[in-house]
Amino acid sequence: MHPFHNQVRLVGRAASAPEFHLLTDGTEVARLRLYATTGPTERGSPAQQAFSLVGWGAVARLLHAHVRKGARLSVQGYLRNRSFRRGGQTHVRTEIHVRHFQRVVPLKEPEAANLDACETVVI
Image 1 (cartoon, helix red, strand yellow):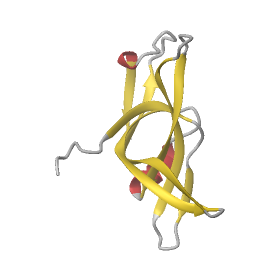
Image 2: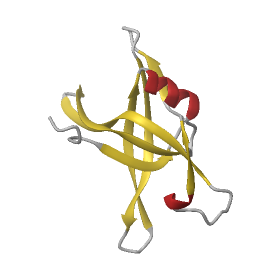
Image 3: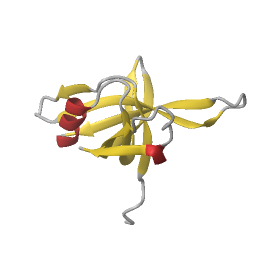
């Protein structure tokens, strides 16, 4: 399989601090939502879309330790569909399973709103 199949890269802001859980088998998992700008709407204002992120093991620990609500993140991962039954119906959710992430810290100037004018802090 080609190494670039099913690869996702997003930059956005954390909707909240990650929810950290320890599963019964000892596996660590962190979940959070990431809001990313997807382009202008018909009215010209930027459109935002929410994406579900999941981190496992060491990535889950790092997300839990270093990400807070509103933190700007650059994430790299892959898409995964998860299905579950609730109320007799099957629901399918698409999640981004995070392999790597970085906090993106804006420069001191307030007009540095684009990514080209940001410092990257690697965790």
